[in-house]
Length: 174
Image 1 (spheres, rainbow, N blue to C red):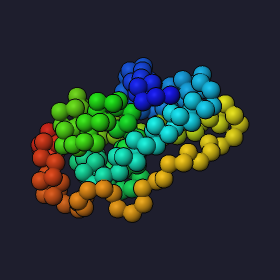
Image 2: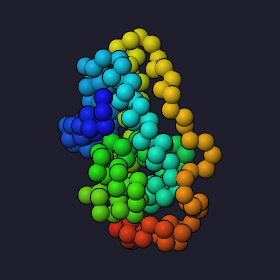
Image 3: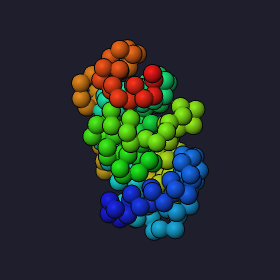
Image 4: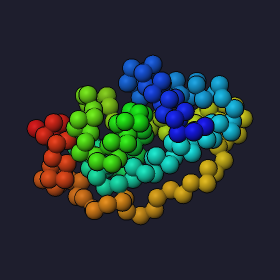
């Protein structure tokens, strides 16, 4: 599976789920179980690489802004990064390159409904286990250790968040 195929699967399932991350996760599992196990592992590697790439202070700040602070914990940030991948290539790439750009890339954002894509992160594991009856093997992708990339940010400091992500703050936390 190449990068284009990965994003086609993400986009198709997001469209079919009408933006509902839990429904998208179910559709991903369904779609991935139609593939062979090696291709599912390829998908998982693409997902993990993007998940790791989004391990950045400014992306974490965007989660804190969009989720009214509730995305500031590690679990919330992990779920947000999965959700960000689930939004498709344009939103993901733009949001990772410049998290403040999410102010223009997102049509809308409801902290009660959006931002939690935890189940998307488990879709490949579930599909692989369904296909093989075994757990997903080590993908050979090292998880980031320590602090996120970029300049540290106090996620509890609203002034710091507004200064670092001014467009996102203005649009979603006026």
